[in-house]
Length: 64
Image 1: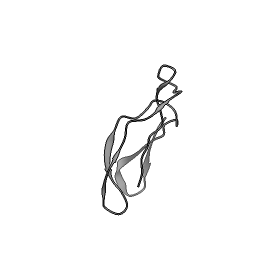
Image 2: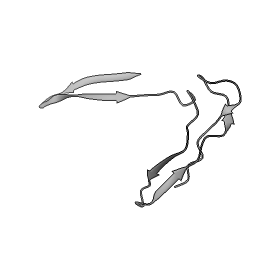
Image 3: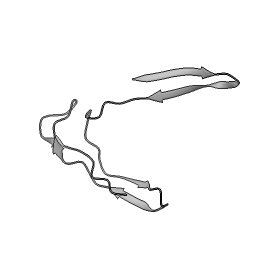
Image 4: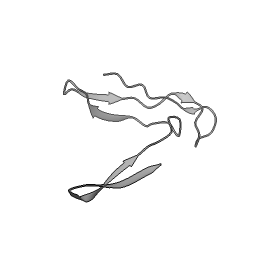
């Protein structure tokens, strides 16, 4: 779901996107954690997903 609106005193639009928790599995991706350390999040494990076949790769395995 996307939500778009305006904010008083700002000419730009404000945009937010909300996604269901179990749409599809994540591939591996890097990110910087709150300790400014680069961390690699592994590919998701098998599970049940809204937009994937049964037993597709599942939840993320991120560790901070």
